[in-house]
Length: 257
Image (cartoon, rainbow, N blue to C red; front, side, top):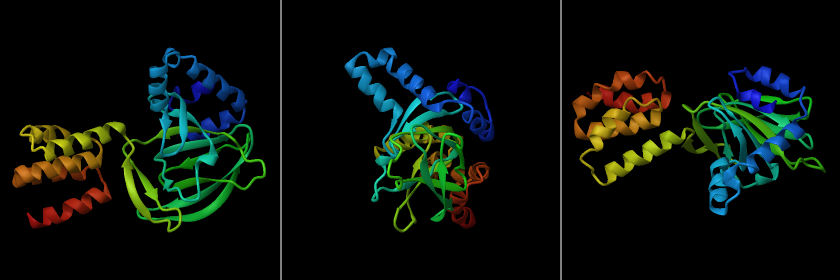
């Protein structure tokens, strides 16, 4: 039943309402059993590769099931430490309890910093919907019997980036592309630029139409070095992304043209 939550484009509110009617501990155990029963888990080398493919080292989560719509993951809240950074989660998240209730610290999210908001208890009858556009969340270890495992349904927005914030200052210190393909294209473009590959411009001409702002900016930079006037003709295309960060990089070049 739990797999049906991400079989169609259900709203976060509908998913949360459905979770209230399910035994999520039992449902999650079934997903874990199904994952470990896959053929890739029967051989050592393939098992290691499979574990790496479903594990997110930045958040300490393990994906148990995924579709083109989203994924269902579990996490040990003890993974977080006082010195670790805080990561935004682009898209919608529905947090749910398994063995024990757990507490969440919510932060109001802006471009360059976050601000503490409130704390919320998540239990079996009260899953929590998080809108990643405006809210960042963190697990709080206050209970004498803390939850050993928590669950989450993720409906990602891969066009947005993952923002990284310092836990003490609450200031933004880095960002990561959420989309794996965007990361690959960025690395590819940087390598082509570094080795001065003559076909790099052709690749950039194709990737200038990519949907991720970071990719099109890197492609634009390569085109700009090769042919400034031709590159500037792409600015109207890039501004269709409606990305404040991208616009701030393009505006001085457009004004100087």
